[in-house]
Length: 413
Image: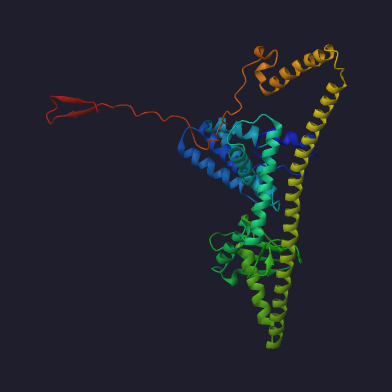
């Protein structure tokens, strides 16, 4: 997943193999549509076209999507006010519907690349201090420092405890599911249908995976995010454990409870569930311990690499000094010509080192184009319009008397 620019995708194909799917970030698609709606003159038509675009984008059935997009494109071509926008839409979006339509990314688990954009912004403004960096070694050093800090943050989370955004979404969806009625669930063959309370849509839930040992589970439902899949937007596109799945789990547990005739079976079930909870907690602690050891090993390895590079530099300096001392001691004390030769050989070395420290001393640098300073600020990303708003023109106000004989022309200051 990336934005609509071809640079990242071409680089991926050049280095890696062609991917099975290529997806556009839905946020970038929406921003591009909003920006190009200015091709339509009237505000009413802009709002109407944007509403239809969002309906086409969020449609999850392929057959319905094809009908809606053909109808929308025909409508854009028939209106002369939307002809320019129709050409833009045909050029950039009609030829690659599988990259931006929701019906072609069901179950992919990706919808936006905001996490990558946030990481990019952190690298640019926090670790590179908002400066343009042309040297590759400085960029790699910033990335290594970023990875090191992320490892330390993860160790703090493992020891202190922190709830991730996915777990927060799971708990919020569980609270929303408590407002839904259980009679909305209709059981069918190998699936369950849940009717929406607000719209006329019918959501279909299927069981995907039986056993899963991941940590993205609901504590009340005792079910992880990978066991069920719903046809709603929250589950199929955004890959969350939606409120319909929580409602279904509550419905299934209620049916199991009603089917139990003997109270002893219910007690045994409670004991089994408590043992299962203890086993799950033990597995979580073991996974956290293994992950913490892996992060500590990574941090210690990076420290050793820094120490090794510093020690190798010290060894090179010592060997150079030893070799220079050996050359000087090899000369005879009576001959001054050998010492003069050594001094002449050291003169260009001084100039070369000075030129390496200051790029302006390199021969031919005057003929080159003026270079940007190394500490120049990067161009900030703007998410708002920078176009100046036109000032309101002064209008003449004419006040007529009752007899219409005289008139006053007032110009506001």
